[in-house]
Amino acid sequence: MDIYTGSVASKGIAIGTIKELAKKDNSVRRVSITDVELEKERFFKAQVKTMEQLDGLYELAKKEVGEENALIFDTHKMMVEDEDYTDSIINIIETQKVNAEYAVAVTSDNFALTFSSMDDAYMKERAADIRDISDRLINVLSNKDNSALTFETPCIIVADDLTPSETIQMDKTKILGFVTRKGSVNSHTAILSRTMAVPAIVCVPVPSDVDGKNAIVSGFDGSLILNPTEEKVALAKKRLELEKRHKELLLQYKGKETKTKSGKKINLYANVGSVGDVGLALQNDAEGIGLFRSEFLYLEQNDYPNEELQLKTYKQAAEMMAGKKVIIRTMDIGADKQIDYFNLDLEENPALGYRAVRICLTEEEIFRTQLKALIRASYFGKISIMVPMITSVWEVERVKEIMKEIEVEFTSKKIPFGKYEFGIMIETPAAVIIADQLAPLVDFFSIGTNDLTQYTIAIDRQNQKLEKFYDPHHPAVLKMIQMVAQAGKAHGIWTGICGELASDQELTKTFIDYGIEELSVSPAAIFAIRKLIRELD
Ligand code: PEP
Ligand code: MG
Image 1 (cartoon, rainbow, N blue to C red):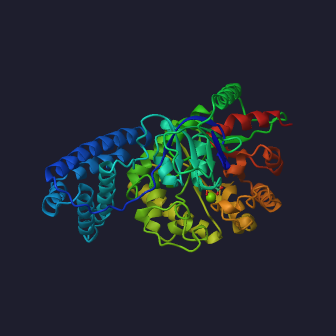
Image 2 (tube, rainbow, N blue to C red):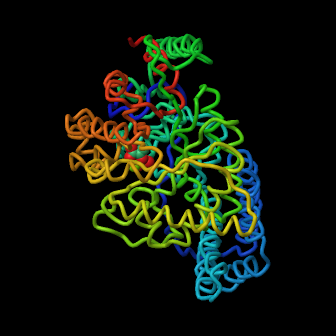
Image 3 (cartoon, rainbow, N blue to C red):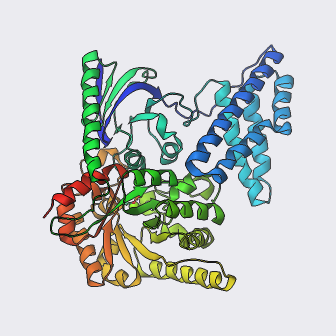
């Protein structure tokens, strides 16, 4: 039995078998072969297996993100079977007498080059799809498990690090826990694991040969126990049972109001990353969605999601919440959320760089598509639109101008839309300081304490080395929250918190005393916060 310790990113206990996520190794070696027929057969078998994987992904994606989104896997299947593509691979195997992996890699490069040199933007984008299916084929050929979505049985995931897009693509029902050697408790991957209510620990010095081993992950003391003794397993099972009972006890708060003893009502909402998570919010009795991180919709795609696809997603969220508020944050791409098709330049300081509203107000057409979908979705439910990373008044004014233009267009074209609230995230010190100038322009403020902490105390939230300096309880951060709530009150708008600090029970009373009226937390945290608020005077 060996114990390795790191930091807790998401609470809970996991007992199970480890699945080590293979590092992405895209290098392919050219190997001479003698049996051409055998090599061709190897390729055809891999082609069939790849098609099966894509079938599985299609079904999973259909469940998670809807049929329209899932269609990409259908397109990938067509590409895998494409005659020209297959002929090219077979030809290389036959003429050069080389391994199938190499033949696929060369074909992939050739086809991708052809696509990317085409004038048509749609065809250009297909280069990424060719690479994607070819990588999948190569991984099948070399028995590498490339697909984060294809765990057959529930397992504990161990990886060097996980990106938000890898995490969002995983089949949540097959994950018992996450353990990463790198990572940070404030990263979006950590936030996703909390939303998924999956125990997660980061910065754990896990050795390299753990695949298939039995383990216990403790999202309480941050430990990973490899090959645990029976005694340890029994203890962990007891803790798991306790957790289960604790959750059951909290269930009595389902349907109860979130009110202090003196009758102060707090709106207790949920943070979600996808429509799939809206189900979790409902199960946990969220009174609304306080933060729908819309950028994950972009992260799941291979190309810009069009207006119809976005409308479908937002409409679905609004309809699922059945009249409860759904606050959708416009895309917060950039920093740690990189997307290939955005073609963002590498930056020296991505957190201070080209992200969120800065992209939106530079590439307005992309933003306009999202705003159109959001405004149309307001016809189907109680949608609020919220813009992140605001630092200046002109940004808010420009966003409002664009929204006005869209409304005028919709009215003239008789495209229906409803009433919607418009708010901004307060997550930069600049926005805090000018909150009194911003308040008259918006219906609400939602404080993003994750970034506000990062920018206030100048600590990169992604840097694991700085974790002990990343202090959301820093008096400067708390003072900022108070200032925002005061500015909001003075201008008659409500202020909420949607950063991770919203679920910090040590601060719940302080926030209410400051005048915070809404807390948006991961779905699994709702009952505990409701219990606490009901016990406050
Ligand atoms: C925040 O910064 O607090 C926030 C909620 O946004 P994100 O964590 O997605 O940056
Ligand atoms: Mg933020």
